[in-house]
Amino acid sequence: MIELLLAAILVLAVYAMLTRDLLHGTIALSALSLLSALAFAVLKAPDVAITEAAVGAGVSTVVFVWAIRATERMEKQ
Amino acid sequence: MIARILVGLLLLTGLATLVARRNLVKKVFGLAILNSAAVFLFVMEGAHSGQGAPIVDGSALQIVDPLPQALMLTAIVIGVCVTALALAIAARLHRATGSLDIDVIKERLGNGHD
Amino acid sequence: MPTRLAALASVLAAAFALWPLFALDVAWPGTVRDYLEAKGTVESGAMNLVSAIYLGYRAYDTLGETVVLLVAVTGAIGMMAAGSALAPREAGGAPVEPARSPRREARSRQRTELIAALSGKLGAVILIFGLYVMLYGHVSPGGGFQGGVVVASGIVFLALGSHGAAPSPLVGARNLARIESAGFAILLVAACLGVASGKGFLAPPLPGGDPVSFIIVLNAVIGIKVGAGIGLLCVAMLTEEAA
Image 1 (cartoon, rainbow over the protein chains, first blue to last red):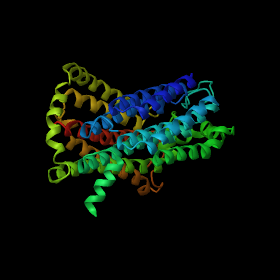
Image 2: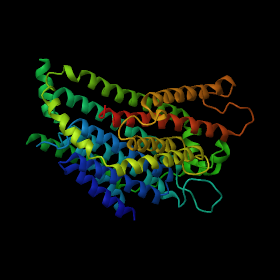
Image 3: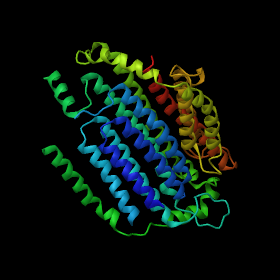
Image 4: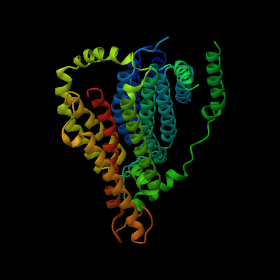
């Protein structure tokens, strides 16, 4: 179970590293946080799961989207 | 064991994003991934020592170690602060130089000051 | 390309250095766990041992974390304000600015009515849930930091529901800043009360009282402070671009 979730998280992290569209990377990181929260709940850490879900999927996505709108969306080659 | 290797790979992915990409927002992605990997390592290792959540309510299950969870809780909140501060600095640099590329920023700032 | 090679080399070096951490199979030390399971609830009064640690055994550390939070939010908002104040004077940024504004307007028109209606209604529910998580942190999963970030995401939802304009006055940037400073001041006063009553810094001040009441108070204060701080950051970032 944990291995499966971790594999999905790793795929999302690699996608966030490689994609040229920063907005797509932000959404991948948000999904990564959500899967992490699920994994923490499985690992018997409900406090960490609540925090990770609220911070990773909510607050940090807002911060990244603000930064992308204030600057530029595509990573230039 | 497999889970631990996967966490290690996640950590290396974060590090690679931090050092190999030149875009500043990408570097912050790397910081966020590194933070996630560290949190994951602590929570996962702490969970080996029991079966129940660390809440003493008279159930028979042996609880997991609450200490790494308490440490990681604050680490997550501080992590989002680091992200916000780093992105504010990146946006400020973009305003000053018109680019997020670290090489271009270095070049334009260097020309302005010399 | 040398940069790419250097990056690859540093990642390989990190893999080599971290290899023992991931490969060695050393048993996790159980001393702290056993002690906390036996004595944690009695000594701190909290059934949730995570709360018992970060508000009981390591409360000083928690105070430091709230200071870090305060400094980071101040720095980020200060950086944003400095950026927008300096923008017209930047020579290098001048050709970029006018070209961007029409595109930005087109983008903000894409925000649909659906998101505004839904997130505006959900915001209040999430705020209530955050308060619950905050106040019942001693008996169930939750506490100050957890409840605080849930409250912050509730504030984000309220801000999204008000079309990017300033949300209701309670969650306006100015009020949130006041709430955060007041929360931090109350936290410091609560920490010093223990000194006044002769029990020590951050100790429960009331003589003979159940220590859990102090944990509930600290949970509420920290939750409100963290929620206001992170909420302030998000509201500033969400409304900055509409202004």
